[in-house]
Image (cartoon, rainbow, N blue to C red; front, side):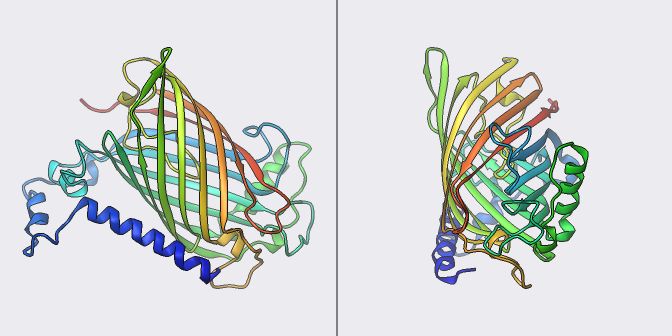
Length: 363
């Protein structure tokens, strides 16, 4: 970790979180702190039994096989796979007022998410049993993601806590070797003997997204979705910003396409796609990250491991399509990313696909 660049990024993250907190609930005007108690009605109760399923989504990202268009590479960020369940919490009215205070939020919606995901990172040439020390370190990352979201017609907040493990116990080596044994003409990965050490991983993510007014040209709908956020934890410390432009037929009433490395809108359900059975749109996203720490490049926090000099600013560009028919939806995208570390020979690209199904909600 480089402390000179860590400090300004951390200050930016903390400053933005304070602004959001002040925007949502200002108790300083009431010395007796009665505002908080007035938001909660003790006669109402809520439990985990009130949760209802909204969607189930499956993700797959890869830099050189089915999702990727073009060259067949196998390096750096090489694979990501995951499963995610979106839930309608059915909060009581008093909980809704507490979690999204009136005045700041207009008729808010809420969503919860539970995900199991794995990522795999390798060197530039996987057949090299002793990669150069200037190459991307090998590592896997296996984690559970727990998300809370709130949204109204103009804005959307995403809070996520990831708990998992980096290193051998993430089973990155096992999964990659199994895939390469299963499919013919695949090289045998040789560099896993130099992967990161085992380390418990805890990371928090926050992101706010806004939505522009929807426009229409020749029957096609268009809108813009800018977003800012940050990561804090021993896996990643960064501030980030992006903007998504999308256009199509029967745009859903949500806050953008699902993303394996980003998030899905858990506040939206089947009704958000309107009464039409079919929906289709294309989108493009441009983003930049100000990175203070990346465990997959900077190495382990508490143990000795391989590391490289990571870049402080990393840009990304993504293009994709999303479609839906009745309860079923799918998405495909291609992402190009600028260099992550100083000795990287060039940028990287990967492909992503996801598909899922929405559940019926009770009347």
